[in-house]
Amino acid sequence: MKDKEYKALERIVSFCNHAGEAKKRHFPTRKEFDEDRFYGDGVALYIQQIGECVNDLSDEFIEAHPQVKWHEIRGMRNIIAHAYDGVDPDIIWEVLATDLPKLKTDCEKILAES
Image (cartoon, rainbow, N blue to C red):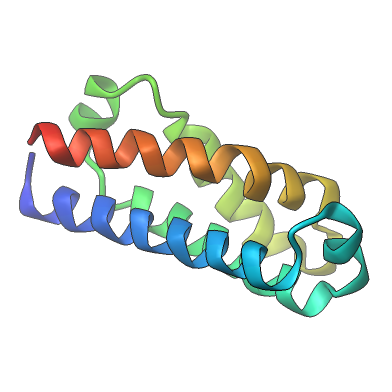
């Protein structure tokens, strides 16, 4: 693994941690998430930054780790970056509650194996 890729994975784990902490502190339930979009917008920014980190991964790295949906992560970044207020809160919640914990685990495993 290239140094640039290692650092990208470390940043992804960090952004997953930040998003998880925001969820824990500010909106542990979907109801609270819907009531306070301020923090939800912050989480969307973390998700966008994770997509930016994926841009630092080579095609070879992505192909070597097919268990992670790298192209979907990059696509989500594009949606958040360009849809402005059109990002569906249902999608953000699903990513936050389900996808980011799995992504964090997958990236930590890849880091540990390197």
